[in-house]
Image 1 (cartoon, rainbow, N blue to C red):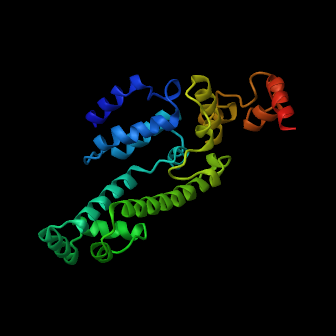
Image 2 (cartoon, rainbow, N blue to C red; image 1 turned 45 degrees about the vertical axis):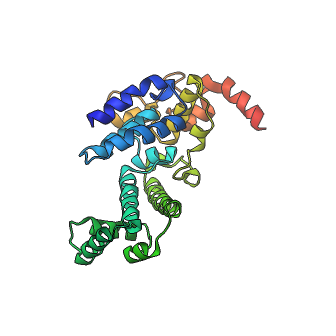
Image 3 (cartoon, helix red, strand yellow; image 1 turned 90 degrees about the vertical axis):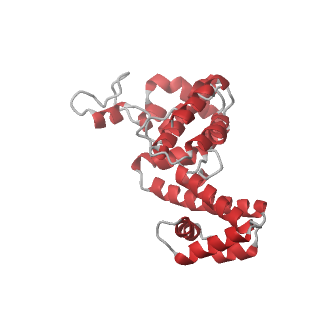
Length: 263
């Protein structure tokens, strides 16, 4: 964990630090390429560290739904990253020219011990609906084909699972699920430049879409007794997202310019 943290800190000078740095897509890619390999060594808090870092990259609060954190960047959960590496190891064994290694693999697979690597790999193959162990050992997929098969299977499985989780979250009711996918950055992040201004605008949009933009009606949920849900500017009605975007007089001039463009 400390090695991965030092690696991440060393990347700060390149701009990997949220809205004041690089484009979000670039930051996520740098994190995946340079930091994740240093995290994948049996760390107990691996999943928590990974999720927290993706939230920080997007400047999202800790209460943001986990499924949205991954889908907005098109990133796989750390469990899937581990599975991909285990499947890569299986392919290396299957392609090995060393008969002793292949014989050991077949023997361990046949033994079916619950704690063995080959029992876990069978579960992973079933999870992603990949070819069976026997087919992989006998078919001899080339490296590029196998990587493409694994990437497609893992992306499809986790996209469906994370989207299903999003449907269950009331805070994500405004987030268009059809535009979310693995290995595809959500269009809010995908259209921004490297400027600080663009990144901050995009962060506000994403917080609105994920139900984490702090308005009076949201503050009431955390502190019923001390917070008035009424809009603090004109005090006409409760300050929710609909009021902020469509009827608050304070932002009428901004809405007017955008409505004219829409017409």
